[in-house]
Image (cartoon, rainbow, N blue to C red; front, side):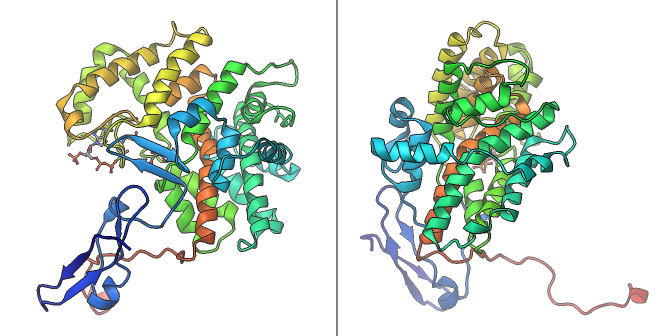
Length: 432
Ligand code: SDX
């Protein structure tokens, strides 16, 4: 219950409807409208769900005005500095930071599930080599539901755990197989003695004909990027996983739906779109032309990597990634020949001083700089959103698990405001 109370007055009938409110531990309270339709015959209207809480959650908290992001109460800045992606996966899944023994056991379980069923690898041969990796990854993840019949009872916690460990462990191997297929190179099997990000780099960049040493700087950079991308409350792809999962469908299918939603350029596809945009801008002298296009309501062009539904202040992840760019590029000895990074820094400075972006609270988001680092690590543009999907898989899994166990959870079924034709009679074709 909340100390706030709201009521609705039906001005036609004069009826007053008291609405129960519940406080949140952090952030806005919620007004319970579940009885609104049955008692007043009206729906609320909120296209894009900008002001609608779809669930109660204990996983991630965002304060868009203050630029706050916390996983299970731990500020992202502290996790970025002190934790590891595997430890963050445990935290998101189980709600607490693991003991040394718990982390070792979890880490070993993930390492033991990295390999793919050989039939999966044959699936990739069904794709042309120019298939977009996101299409391959979402397809292959959906196919996992055809193989793993031992984890279909989603009410069984053991099944949910096996599913979770399996998808978190295998998503890098699936991503690497998609990448190798696009290169027409042989698949590289995971090496379980390697850590999560080192294994990914090994599967991406090693070839059977040469020995390959993982660059620890690259692995460390990837680990940090994955921590920053791991979860983000009820974003588009997470809400898709929850909505698909609310029907009780196979969890691999729900995750595949989330991958498809993430692919959009307004969402996780923005990291690829940012590099395309920077390459199109090309030179700092063109920045003002593109900023003008972004401000022109008649022009569909938007400054990719800018703006956010929730952050109306800075995106704390963008701040961390921007600082990381300098360090990673310097350590990799690339700080000189990265004109795109210089261009991104200049574009950000110009945009942040422009009244349009200030008035609309448009700041760089997580996607604005991440592509610069992926590129510096040798990851091609077409794989940027796949990297986002790898990192976000644990967030989708944690949110799906919470939904399955939530006693308030029921099949998601939004309503609509109908503005189509009134009833009319069928007209035979001769009379049309
Ligand atoms: C992610 O939700 C999440 O948490 C997502 C994410 C996660 O971790 O899961 O954080 C990851 O998806 C980050 C966002 C990546 N997308 C992009 O960078 C694409 C470019 N940004 C936009 O398309 C846009 O800002 C959105 C989609 C991110 C947010 O859109 P909203 O909240 O629906 O805002 P809006 O479209 O209503 O914009 C408000 C105004 C509009 O102008 P008016 O109609 O009021 O005149 O701001 C303008 C928009 O035209 N605007 C932009 C702009 N973004 C918004 N103008 C120019 N360039 C932009 N990038």
